[in-house]
Amino acid sequence: MKKLFVLPLATIIGLLFFQGTQKSEVPVSPDLHVVVKKMPKKIKAIVDQKCYGCHNANAKSKKAKAKLDWDILESKKKSEQVEAKGKIYEVLAKGDMPPKRYLEHKPEGQLSEDELALLMKWSKIKKK
Image 1 (cartoon, rainbow, N blue to C red):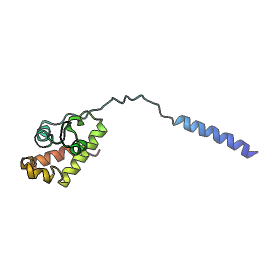
Image 2: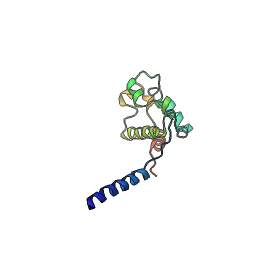
Image 3: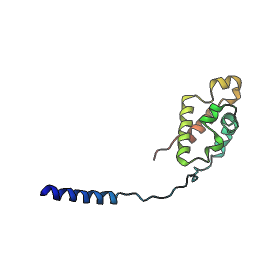
Image 4: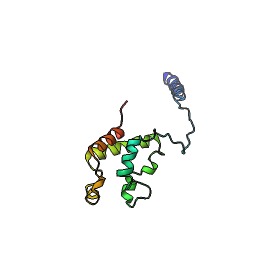
């Protein structure tokens, strides 16, 4: 007799629990983009001079364009921008950008210590 009483009671409690934990659904437009503040002028100048030639929508290298396209970075969602900046930081910290093969042909593409420091500071993800 007790089993017959416990089963419906557990079902009712379970239904009440799940009903209370339902999340309200807020419609989200797939076109909604939250833009991180614009790139600072000093950073933009470095990017335009040293990075943009290979990392833009019209670049010859599909690989470089696929890794980072400065033309679309600011139009991406905030989470995607943060992820991209984290990758930029990692690549700079490893010394992988600009690539050594590129610098053999275009030594003027080398980042100065100040430029590297500014880019790394800008791209470093700040933990809250």
